[in-house]
Length: 335
Image 1: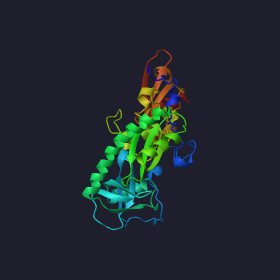
Image 2: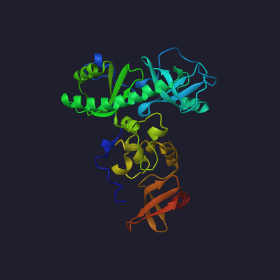
Image 3: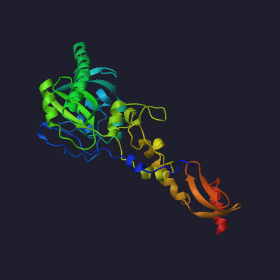
Image 4: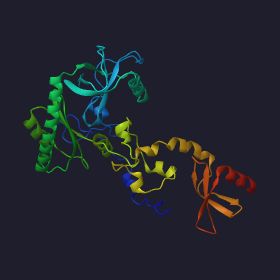
């Protein structure tokens, strides 16, 4: 119980990722773009394509999930019907030009993921063809260019006095665009940096500011549970998490336990919250009292998953638990 109330200053760990992203840097003076979803970058890198819509029933369509660098994924329509298996490299339509990615999933699992994310009926770009050996070699060459571009970006950021933390660099396959994903405190004016980078690479330069949670997703890692990060492994949408979710579940309010690698409250605080909220109505409220064989007990906390009520008695500091059925029995006797 020593760390149960160790929550001083924990509010700063609440999910407060930046709610803006930087797009079309060439025409923007300072980053003023607002994204209603609160910072997720999936829609900013091509998950919602241009083009005609699709029928809501996608069961008959051959849809494939393709993965790109920094754990970015998107769905594409295999209109040509060419057999494509997971692990294959494919050339796909991009926002401008073409891109190369690696197939993650095909078949029914893709339809299930789209239904779960509410994307059924949303427009998709198309898979153009399987990538050739020469194209795969060019793809690997682009990865080397990205590593060098990272050093160039950092040097020029220092040159212009910009405190930017570079997360990753992504060079589009056809080299029509190079995107720098970064994080920083507040908003900055980096027009001079963009112009300088454009003069070096002679292509379209995009800088995208992302929050801490998206940064963790792109970098990857393992949580305290020993498994890969949920946002990397399966969690498609990052939902807002607050300290109230932890308090409602009687979780120890300790920053070290509640925060993930991103420095924000763990996404898993939401997993059991709906069930906890549903079951709480059957339990007594904290600080309510009941008379038992040991005297008057005050409800310290409840365990909705094990049907336990924890009581603290006036005679001592020790806490003892009884079952919910026992508590209700004592409560009935009191009345």
